[in-house]
Image (cartoon, rainbow over all chains, first blue to last red; front, side):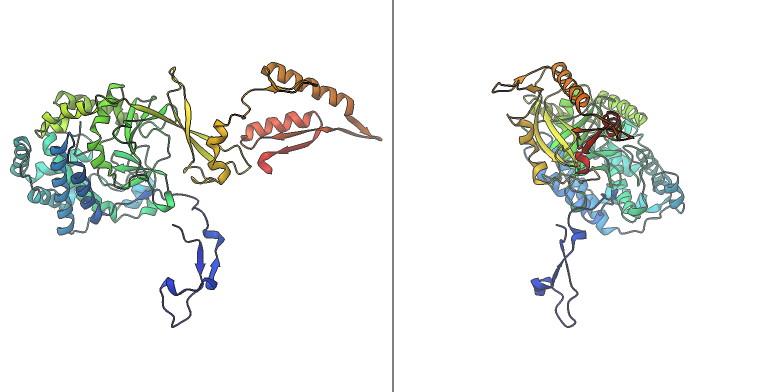
Length: 322
Length: 198
């Protein structure tokens, strides 16, 4: 809640706590009444909470869900991400030409942060080392073994391909683990960027890393109540996108929202009849626990239903490419 | 970003061929039929969101109208909810108590939905066509203007018409406002105001 009143400075010697301020000291401050004139363009991720919260969300969604086993696997993967984030601190090597990139309307993080910074490979390898796959299917274990048997150049090459949005079809299983490591690395990179310097790149393109959005969130935080933010599939940056406008083609005509009311009214898809694409649309202002990646997987039934109507998915979930 | 969409579409096409993309590749492919079966009995509910401008006052707050039903099909549409538009620079998602009650305004039984006419000496309004309404307004304006138009004040040409007034609406665009001004002033009308100024 915004502060509606400004307090006079406490007399010296008096306690700092607000409870000691007397009502007569409170002065009206009309400038602060109401809302700010604009919403922040980006909200950078907080890696220290991001993966731990996501792991909790996956674990909460898994019981009695048709995809329960897969959600449980992703909960373990997110736990591994949280562990790597907490136990392998590093300073990301940000590009020196950052200001130039922003000036020319490019995303802040280029591909060579992935391929040149040894911390990126360290994150991927750490995720492979700590992930706990007890009871996972043979194919999952085989993918993990295949990754561990690869040379580090091959793993890094896979990360580069994921960063470019060209997931090799024959390596989809391996890509899930590499993407998990890449998310840890890119979230740390995005977290240290200057949010005020970032500028819009294009519709549906992350201003930090150039990634595609996973889902659209109607958020509930104070300066941007009920504004819409897109959540990056790679670096988890949230960036503002005007509501009722297609995130893939920018058209405002023919935008509709579909949902399965019997399952959840807080998870919908935003469809566009101009480009026949859709994106998950999560009402985080009604249910703050909704996580773009976890709830995208959990609402897979909605994907199946909307595909029957002839819409294609415009969002990308690196842990669940379908 | 149509390039991006088509590339994703291609990826999706390949993924389906590979027994459910990541699910199949990681050995969870047998979960897919259960996921499909779980949603099969349910029907997709469509909701539309439409931007509009609050009609009450000159602040002209942006609102979003939430409606059920697809306008392109035969289903009947109905406004379900009205909310401030968070992207609108004027109100940033907020609404005053009048604006918050717009849904009742939309659904009100006494709301005027078409031209109504109460003939002299009768007790009630009757629905009339737009042609009838516009013809009648034009005729009355002309009658009044012919009777009361002041062309000269002594030797000075004034060309004024002060017995009829005109009030513009709050949600007019610049273009509508320009046309309204030109139309009303060209008739010599001086009593002219706009809700957007009030």
